Length: 107
Length: 392
Ligand SMILES: Cc1cc2nc3c(=O)[nH]c(=O)nc-3n(C[C@H](O)[C@H](O)[C@H](O)COP(=O)(O)OP(=O)(O)OC[C@H]3O[C@@H](n4cnc5c(N)ncnc54)[C@H](O)[C@@H]3O)c2cc1C
Ligand code: FES
Image 1 (spheres, rainbow over the protein chains, first blue to last red):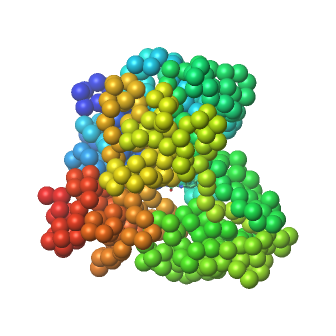
Image 2: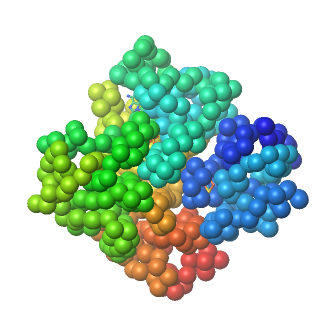
Image 3: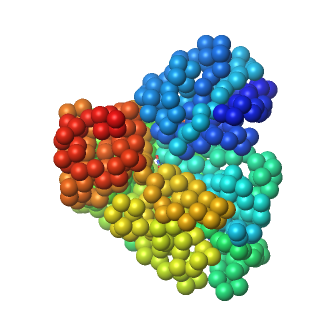
């Protein structure tokens, strides 16, 4: 079991559990987390699954995939250094406790 | 605000309607009825990743407990057979449900043209189809694909990567002719031929035999035949209920059908294009989900806004990701930018931008359409076709 915490723009937090191999996007949908739309189902074609990875977790979640940056750059909310497409972050035990912030706007 | 909302069709759009109704704050009953046995799932991977991985779980849009948690009644393996608009009830294979508002999200079925022997060909529309096809592919050495549209070509690319001998037979003179420019058709023709796939153009299939197909006059040998020759909207139930239909269930700009207690969305809905007013029916995840969100806002918040979302679409074929922002008709002119993006024009107005492996331009084009709706040629020329500068 891997715990993931989603933090809304208003600061409210929800912690849910996930299985290894699930993506941060899929975990959000499974738990009805507001603000992750994920229209393309993880095909890196929509940028509506944008998150900001909190603090030191950014080192743990790895590098962006090919093409991910271009999508993020044009997402509705501003791209920051910590921006990721949550469909491209696959959960492992090492990411237990991961915290991600949801941007103001997705679509 | 309607209390009891019934959704017919538990696919991409029907599921989104249920999700959005709850997100908008609907507290009344929601019944989601689907004829397939599976929890709502996404179709795009069926012709892409799923054929490789066979992982059906990753297709699922929501887990089972989601429906319990959200108090959404989910009826699977249940087919709606009749709508009674006067009594406001739907009858299905195991009973009936009353509704205050009904949402039709019935999608499409594969076109099965009248070709001798076609019952030998496999479909690729549902998860069950894809499962059967995956199994058949693992045993086949060669495959013939009827139809050179997105789905046929995506499948062809995967089959070729598996090492099968692949032939694609397309009746039109170019690939994906209904949606993309001739330039883009050509680019993908080269891609597929470069992979070693035989692509026959202007080659309508006249029969399917025990040994393969006959395309044009050419006999093609294949162990496996796949049918991907387009679809037709599932609008029979609506039609029998007396709703207006025209290549789909006819709706107004708010996605309301000719009955004010019934909306329609996604692949089965024919609606006025927000920029041209022309009646269109789109087969895309974008349309299904944006339609669903608009309908939910109308039903819950009383928001009567017209549908205005920018159309977009993607197709993955081998390592080429084709993305389309906007919506063009086959006659629309094409101007190819030096960086490879194709700009389509309907008269003086930009109708679509097609790109391959250029997500940045695609996303910018979507923003451009959201901001300017139908930019003119002069406007584009003044900005030297650099979309980024048009957005400033
Ligand atoms: C192989 C494949 C690949 C695709 N790839 C892409 C892609 O890359 N990008 C993209 O944007 N789009 C793609 N699409 C299209 C996309 O999947 C559809 O546009 C989308 O699923 C439409 O959603 P919908 O809700 O309108 O219909 P569907 O998702 O088809 O759902 C309709 C559901 O209604 C059910 N139903 C019908 N009649 C009844 C009835 N009377 N009673 C009960 N249930 C009923 C059907 O069984 C079905 O499950 C692809 C489609 C396929 C088949
Ligand atoms: S879900 Fe579409 S880009 Fe992540």
